Image (cartoon, rainbow, N blue to C red; front, top):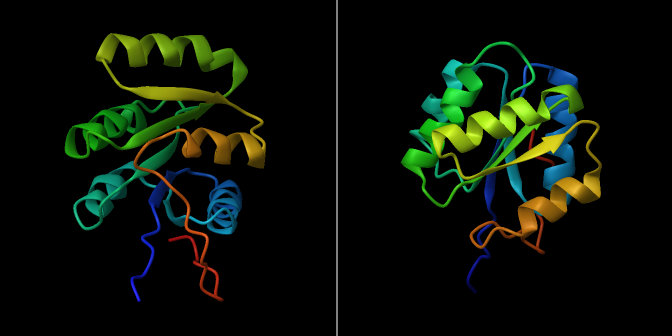
Length: 140
């Protein structure tokens, strides 16, 4: 019997509680998920795993997460990039994404579970699995 492929979503989020929550939501929604708090680790993970989608916190003043979003999309052109930020930053982040040619969507915090899963489901290459194993994947 052929095993159904589960899409892999990388979470780049400095707040461990938020990262763990996002990973749990994604796992429950049928996705494989791992998180990193370090922008340096993002590209290292991407060199070892095929990234189908990335949920990246860009709310800090550190531009490295924005740069990593571009690098991920260059490495995996069909990777669905979702940038998370606060309402006050959304216009600046959207402008930056447009200026750099990043194909992404800007999501504003607070983000509901259903909104996150709906945004991922709109990508052609990112589909949840409906046959989940019995154990939970831990955030990295």
